[in-house]
Image 1 (tube, rainbow, N blue to C red):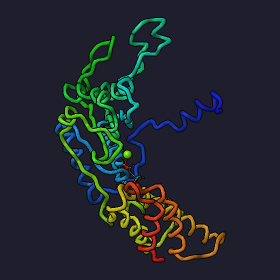
Image 2 (cartoon, helix red, strand yellow):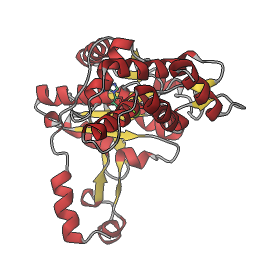
Image 3 (tube, rainbow, N blue to C red):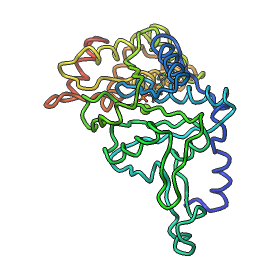
Length: 312
Ligand SMILES: Nc1ncnc2c1ncn2[C@@H]1O[C@H](COP(=O)(O)OP(=O)(O)O)[C@@H](O)[C@H]1O
Ligand SMILES: [Mg+2]
């Protein structure tokens, strides 16, 4: 186990202190530019937005980018985000009393550790509730008062009013995808700008893969096209596939191919053609990147996609 002193030093070195200084490499063409504009419109009018889309279409990166722009403009670095699921309780948003201090001193403010929502409300920062429809209704209800009245009650301490600059964003997968609760009607009614993100257009997706490929990994344009054709094939096949390959899968394939090309350049392996590498890489990436429809075997789907796009 890491020792205490080492932990503190490493922790401080790796701490994200300022979101406005964070380098976020983002492609803003196509749907992303439009979505960013809508986020800005929502902010300017004091309406709370939601980003809705399947996994891996860029919801989180867009929120982080938006929060970093806001942080720069408002000169306020306050940005908090949590990813929700069934195990999240209201105290994860609000904060809680430290049992040891509370035992000694009672429910005093000194004993209270503020949570991310309360912190963002007090500091006038941005709060992102990621995967909001995976939270139980019990936890979703914590958000009703902050969104409607810009206030929140902390047991034993009192009710606070949020700073004027407090802003809330949420992101979620479309409700029809299994494994998610519904967003409660009450919460839905308080979110007023719905922004849909989907798998991007080809040119945008290729740009996203390029921007995410480390500089020392160089692949040909024709190889990028092949990777895209594999990804696209998974999205066309709606009969066998419930959730197709996301942008992440394309990035992963490009990185793995880039590594093979780098090894070739260093003469560590002999040169082979794209089809040779990609049929293997596609198998390893797609195996866990697709969700087949019930009764379908992912291996069979992957085989047929490879045969169709790469031949044989
Ligand atoms: N517009 C974009 N520009 C750059 N990278 C992107 C963009 N959209 C998605 N990505 C990349 O795709 C991956 C998935 O994005 P993410 O925001 O985590 O998706 P989601 O939150 O919708 O699941 C990440 O690696 C992210 O960096
Ligand atoms: Mg996400």
